[in-house]
Length: 594
Image (tube, rainbow, N blue to C red; front, top):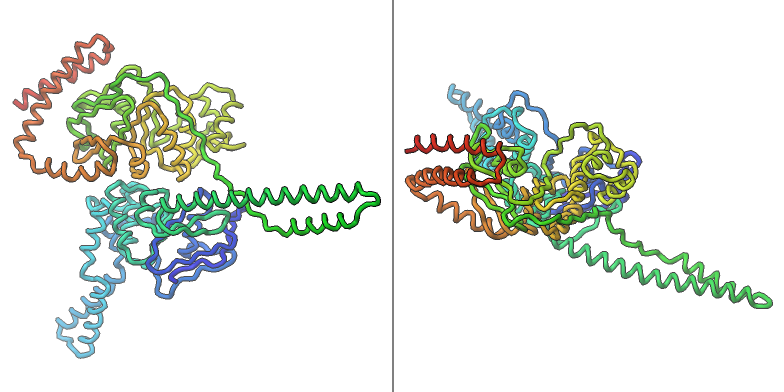
């Protein structure tokens, strides 16, 4: 045993979180903790880390066990990113300073047997602690998490997601024997997630993770702990194995419950008949009364099987309005930058009923492509155009509300024309019960804002769904409901996501942005991932002259396409003027290239 929660009782406010919870984790075990939001997953990690204490019971850990727990971002006002990461080596650097002091003493002529022994012991300790490998370890983890490019930057200048990556890196560099991970894949792009998976898989200590990332749990977990009704229930295997075992358990419990209910009903009917016969007898039959009482006592002694409770899930229903034309969305020769170039001369065509996912590292321009489709962003070069009869439903990653004092029900009704009573009925299907509909927008969690936006989308006339990280903030049950709903949608879906489980389940076409280029793979995510490396190696080996020739041809292609577009009578006057400006700029660029 390395760490154990023994008979834990915990109440927060008026909510009983744990009631006699038991959990024992042994050496080298990798487990994932699952359960609905609010069941106490993060509370359990805090108890195991010693950040909180139980009301009753105790947390026991092995004497030499060390815990790494990333739970909050501390302030480092004067530190660079490298200096923050190097905090993990504080004890090693302290030892190094002592060794350097002794080296200086010996250089000054203070050489003695005692000093040499002392230095030898320190050097051996320094080697055992990996003192000569600190730089290589730091660089490996910085590269893996994608933070190597800003090692010299001030820590406080980073975004919240970047700070989280740095603190995760610092924790991993400390090499604790127990890793406690709370939603570790949040804020990570796919490359960093996959690197973290490999790191965790090869980690020889204990890993206890709370996550909504099902693919991550499939890769890292050997055991799943489900928190239910304040207790911990153990399932062996990864997340998919847990889902199957859980379903079998529910079916078995339901069969036992129904069988017992039949038995109870039969006994109740027998007791009722015995009492009736006893009372109708003349004189009354005491023997029948005694038999009835005896059966009532037996009935009271029966240990009742609980009826399995199915979790309340969102009730989503998404119907396509009248269909769009065959070509739904096209990106022609798109180049765009925000201070730095996002992509250059990219092409992408989206057709009716496509299931297209746009993937790539953070900041590569995935969300920008969606915003071009909505008209929120105008490409600096090239054309983004919608097909005929396209009606967009857009789920943004950021929830911007002009008035955060508005109530949930009023925000919903601002986009869906229904009465307040009907709005409350609809919102209940999205888990807004009772007074929840009167909450102010400013007081909603990320998950609640996502559910509200989904409720609006489900009641609008759409045939093209644009989804930007739609599974963010949703618990696993809600993600599964969303996936089932999207599977039955008859329109076109274009999504940006880091949720590989979601990608693999729904999408059959992958647009991968990398090194300012976009490559389309006609297949699912796993297939695209396999093909990507080979395809990229071919591009890397292409001669410089061919790449330059491609750029020259692309400018001419842009001119030709714009000239064709200008001949289309359906273009509005304003759009025609924009195209003429773009065409003029392209002629100038082409002349310069010539």
